[in-house]
Image 1 (cartoon, helix red, strand yellow):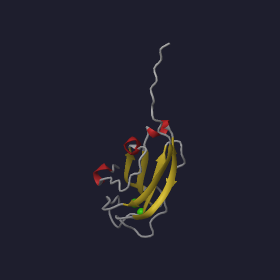
Image 2 (image 1 turned 135 degrees about the horizontal axis):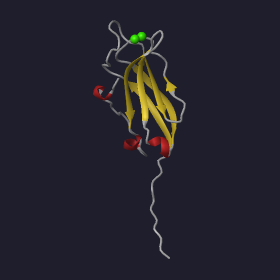
Image 3 (image 1 turned 180 degrees about the horizontal axis):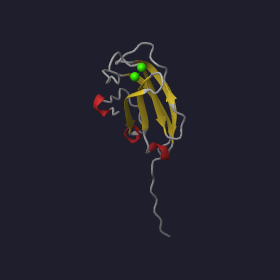
Length: 122
Ligand SMILES: [Ca+2]
Ligand SMILES: [Ca+2]
């Protein structure tokens, strides 16, 4: 009898996202400052939206708002999508968005993940 066994680590579990702050964001409006809120999504899970900041700002402090997402091996590949939005009457503007590759952070707790402004695309 011959056999082969290969162990693959399963990337499945709970992902805790803590939103800390945004700094020096690109203003989607010609005048004034945007009314920032954030929106995060893992495929197959209900999207999560923060409250809109009380004051208009390009340097939002998210006060470490937290949310848990269930991640499966399938949805792991799609990553964590985060959008920073400007609350408007009618259609909201996108301030910036990013897809975070979850494999980079699999199985370890990672604090202080910086996403440079250049990586936020609109
Ligand atoms: Ca706007
Ligand atoms: Ca607005």
